[in-house]
Length: 295
Image: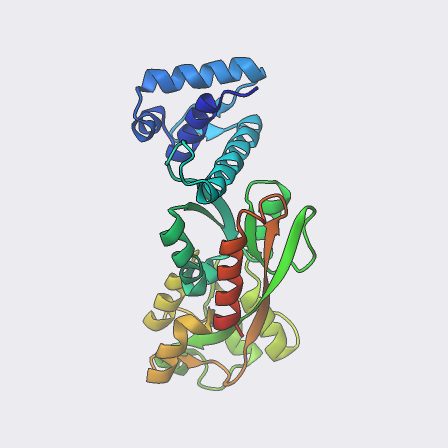
């Protein structure tokens, strides 16, 4: 039988990043945390923590941390049915993978009520919407907002809606780079914004507009809000979620490169079946918000 006091120490080290911060979180001494982790490593016969700044879990450590958080989540749910049951009142952390555009446009609002009511903490794992499902496949998260419709093994899928993007830039940028129209030649010279090497939204828009992609100069900018700011500053054009730019489009601070063109990305909520009953309220909130805010 696993020592859940030792598991709590391990999870705290990985969550907080150091033995000292883990000790403060659990109201014990750093030496007590170190001893508990050492005993757990001896018990399972494997190194569980890579010491560093910050400390990181080994593969075996990750498995044990996920097991511990799942157990704590079940106890949290049981506590609502048995309010007099003794137990640890500390917060439970749920790892969720989500794309940056959803995080900055609608997802925080979707989870806010549930978080306020339950006190649950969320560990947001940010990745491209085409790749968040990989976090589920690796077992590193319990749920994900993803563009992948096919269920990950062991998961259930619910449609959320479509995140709508507009290709936008400032008036000054459009006048400087597209005075003769949004042509292949102009697009090949006008700097575009790209989130990271996984981001194909700008390429998808160019392919939709021209019928084929072209090489373009890029600013690499891994921030959804940064995209909007960069467009307003006139340093590039990019695909922005309509929720983040609709006010700027109304005032004229930003304009579409080609009016009434957009890219729509279907999004889905995939949740681990083993955790689905425990995350039922969160799932309802996410799905309702997604269907309210997304196209």
